[in-house]
Image (cartoon, rainbow, N blue to C red):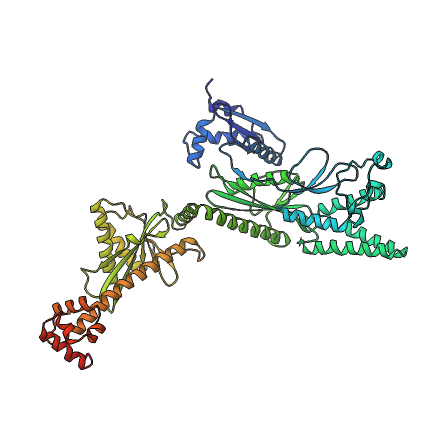
Length: 601
């Protein structure tokens, strides 16, 4: 039976829900959510094929069946979408880069419950807290709990019948004070249960209630003259207060709030989550998402919100986000803070996500150098408003000394790195005097006329070291060759690092920290260095020739021979008459000796 998109779409209701696309083999290839199922799904089958990306076009071409599930609210849609993506792992959905199970603390569902760390969530009635972003964070919490409450660590079945039957004996943990010996009935189950309840409150982030109870018990112990008990309770109070002071306390009035921030590029997105309870950040985690269909930040953030709220079992009624989301759900309030404590919370989340993104990209790029190159080229393409990645760039710079010895240099960068074997020097041939614009026009014309004659590929970008004047001269050279539309060309002015475009009077300013500007600066400096080196050699050679040719009887041919043999005027001055005679006739050698004796004047 053939699939007819229009008929399939007509069957969809105009209500919120989650849709699934299937291919011809009945495999789920995409899962999405929508406020209006019919409108959203119909967008995949537009007659003008105006999709956001070619990948979306490919996806639409493979759809052979559509199924949907209605939900009551958009929050429910988020959670269902997230669960279906994790279950089916559809080919065209965002990939949640969560390749490890994060650790949690579990309070076991058993008599005299044990508390320990685990990565396995078992639905046996036990209570799990977390997950924690790292094992270190989990262990820090566990150590704090152990310092507050003596708990059993054995796995004995401590039922009332077993304890009354005397089946167990106290162990070393009891002797060193880490356990109160419930195995022999030395600790009442009610006392142990009270400790567990206080631990639950601490793990939920509700330390205020536990602190108040400890203060009351200290007063009671002091009133009954049980000073040893009061001292032990005071030690617990100090430990808990110290833990609280080290936590990220943001505001005593902010309670049960989820905070999210996002940082993304062309291929990846990173979302940070902070859970705030009673004014403290009690949980934080960042995940990585790999884009598949060029998803927007809003789409990625909504997916991550569903993932985190599901993972952390959050029931927060307020969610702080960096921008407005098109969500209408009476059960949840979305806040985009402009100032105050919630704004500070969002800024804290942004710091976390940017640090995570930076460290993850650095780690990945060390293992995959090509990824860094692609990222830099993509950034350059965006910053410089190019239509293609600038894999091959050529940069020109002119040099002269008081209008004399004019030269030009061209450096080549391939894949954002210097390609020194492709560097070229140019002697200015058609320009008289210090005319930088005419010199630039000459060398650019010569360079690309030769590439065209040889049938060589043209660069993806040409960079001119200079402002509007030099850029205009270079552009006129390209026009003479008829290739002004084939090669993007820009000029970079040195004073303020301004980027100029042909025909645009206003420059473009790039972020000073941008890698695009760093590559352009490196290229310009390299062209300047390469040009200056060649210019100095030419200038020195010309100056030496002039100095020798001023000697009566020494002409250009003799000067050329002497410099070729001795390499410098200094060595000529140190040479003997016999050494000079080996290069030039005796009469010229004698004149050189006289010149040397007179001090080389």
